[in-house]
Amino acid sequence: MKFKVQGQPEFLMAISLEDIAVLAKVSAKHYDAVCREASADDGRGYDPLNRNFITAWRNHLEFDKKYYQPGDAEPMVTATWRNLDCSLKILESINLSVLRDPIERLVAERIRFDFIRALETVRPLYAKWCTEFDTVEEEDAPRI
Image (cartoon, rainbow, N blue to C red):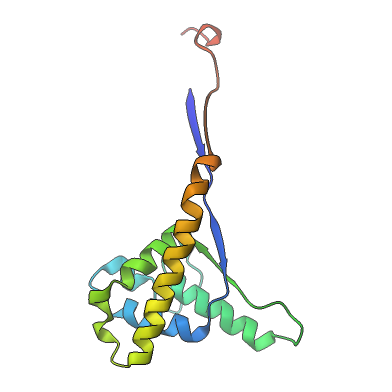
């Protein structure tokens, strides 16, 4: 049997609650249901499929802020490639019309730039995280 193993990056990000608020604002008004779901807060909390990742980031940072002690490491959230890619779709320029405040638009553009840079930095590493193999050679395979 043939197998292909691929590594998936996990990003640890020092994103602010203010940045998350801007991202959530655009997400909530997005034309695509998946993008709207990213900021959904139905009160059920943890989503094992990570569909409401923006809400999860906010909840994580709010919890850390509540219990933060001087000298603690800067709070960070975990993101997947899919989270960053979905965020970039959320932040497409046509969607930024929901942001009336010019400062919010600048924040959105900075987040977009940062996420693009993160994905571009990791993309060349992907080939090193993949391998293919056969579990059995043809002549060694059991005959049925």
